Length: 334
Image (cartoon, rainbow, N blue to C red; front, side, top):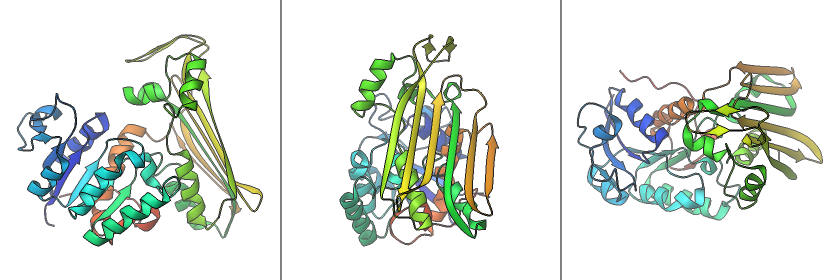
């Protein structure tokens, strides 16, 4: 197997862990790194990762120059959540003929909110021979791809309910902040109204499931509410007092032909008891699948991005979803 040349963009907690994971793959070479943090620019990636050695990949804020100089096969990308915000980053890679695997939540199904922009990126990627994929644990796997895989043993599916319970105290600091830990409920609701707070990707998951099952949704509903603590909760990063926000309850329902066919229920908060993931398929046969303890979000996101690399490299060019590629599986490098 030839060595896969990778550039990584976005050296936050998830991005750094992706880079460390890539270092453990014998047929992968990290040939460049991109970040906008002045404290990281100009430093060797090995120093930032605590690898104990120099990697020869100096962090730069000029992605186009890094891609041009290092000539990678693929860009792993963990910068922002909004597809519109990362569009030019993705287009830069596509114009360079570089494949992309990104954790940008809206990229899991960008046609939902930005169909014209998604079409434009797809055309650029096809023109230059690049494949672009958005993936992750949620969205990207637990509340969409995994559910669709389970329907593979159903003769008929009437509806799907997917429930995810996450103890946010086990997650990285940016996620705890994103779910509003330690805020007052009024502040939480105002920031949600402004689109500045909350989980991103629940509707992308819903519409990806609908697309996979051939359901054209007539409409959807979505609700985002704070989960308010009734006892003191402390994490490495936040103290949450009774009456303050411990996290988020994000629910959504999709309707097809006037009938509710998809229910998604995500509750992610500090101190959530009995974390789990559950998929209930009302079909023939009916099926319930539960992961006790839930899928660990941060580690699983890292794995989802890394494991997608070989499948993206083998893909035809264009903007892809998880429906377009073979089933996810571990990437073993020897």
